[in-house]
Length: 246
Image (cartoon, rainbow, N blue to C red; front, top):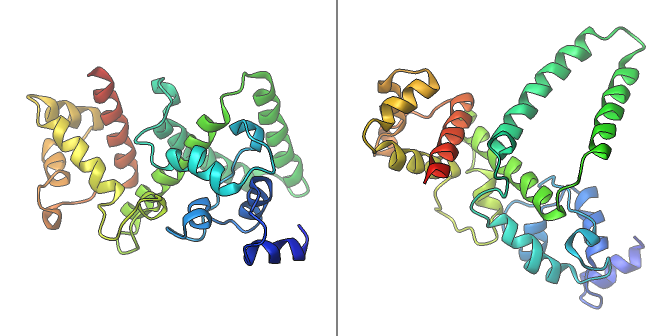
């Protein structure tokens, strides 16, 4: 992108095109919500689909594409995935498991074979993806957003003194003082666990004592103990299962 083109965009003479915005966001790891609205965290590494994925042209105005196609995905209450074995929570947990495997593989690979290993893994995965049918660009982007949401929950659990989670700060309509994703999750769990026998069922599902569930679901936040990252993902999984039954 030419320097003069950037200058014209900065001074408002030329609208920012979606194709150019997509490249800038990726190169600068910039948050599309921040670029479009000035709200949320400035930094957020997330891959936007090509213009054709939204059914628009590369020279379409970025602000229009954001308002019509991207912003609703950031505000979506849940993923479009309907199969339990394809849920964002399971995908996120699988990614964490794969990272542990890759860490171990890279420790074991002999000298001079690191690039062979990483290239082989990438080629194998890309070959599988080429064979399988493709989901829509919007569904893929929604999953990427949910990955950031789940990462925000995990960060909140593991680093409670940090700022609130990425979901809250990256939502176009976020406001200071909004509850965090973890707070929302606990509220969902509390509502479902209030049914007769549900708390005992949840404790059995998680493999913990019922007293631990009580600590996590305490009404007052100051009295509440936060679950670890593993149990947080399991709570999400349990909530999704229970809500599908309704």
